[in-house]
Image 1: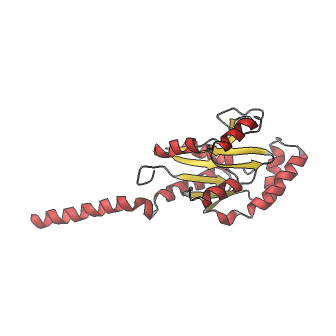
Image 2 (image 1 turned 180 degrees about the horizontal axis):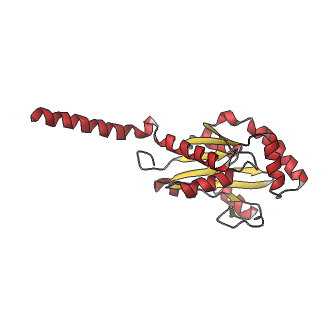
Length: 215
């Protein structure tokens, strides 16, 4: 958590099929005081998905009502389905001192970055176009036309890598999770977050010096 007791907000983006959700889920399991804010979506749940675990599934009408009420800190239309991050859910976690990681697309990340809401942004990349294509085909979730559409979007998204603070290549799961964890540790060690702690330590040296002079 930050020096003020508030958690840090991390954003993770990646092309569809890169494995970002799997990476972040493993990261959350292994990292104390780190939570993932579950996105809301208007799309139907896929086979094997659970409401409140994979996403918060709502109707299109409900999602539109949440937009109108200003409940989302960001939302985007992705392949004809709406995805969004509810501000109150994220704020509750951050205020409790927990770090929060949002898995959102390039559009959403750009919006939050422009508003200055993210403490660090991370872009996860596949090792190559060929590897991404093999992963999309291998997971058997989409039709051939849908896979081609995702690959076309991925070509555009990978060019956005230099908008992010950090890059993680998902070539091997454990190694990629370790890189993500290192980023979180490094963010907490930044001087602007540790300044108060460092000053308190400096004070102990000054107090010791005063005691030495009196004796």
